[in-house]
Figure 1 (cartoon, rainbow, N blue to C red):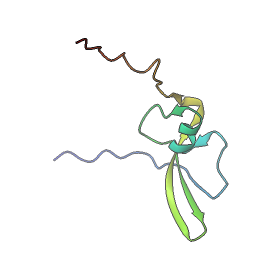
Figure 2 (figure 1 turned 135 degrees about the vertical axis):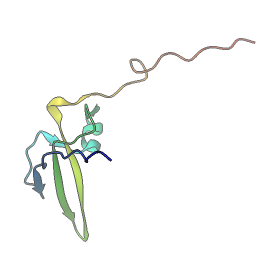
Figure 3 (figure 1 turned 90 degrees about the horizontal axis):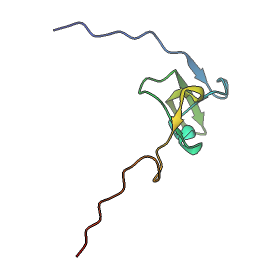
Length: 81
């Protein structure tokens, strides 16, 4: 068995203390963007009321536009009867 690949540790931010260019995937989607890869830039530890958790953060400056109906897909084939 080959050894597991180790990644360098990611920066962690708590609460509102995170750089403004680091956004969650949902926040990027709300701006019409998506992350360029699957590896996050950092981890965000949050607590909202009695709910706490952790979320991946992606750099907005590296994000790409979401595909749209006009640009992201080929037109569907027409079937004539």
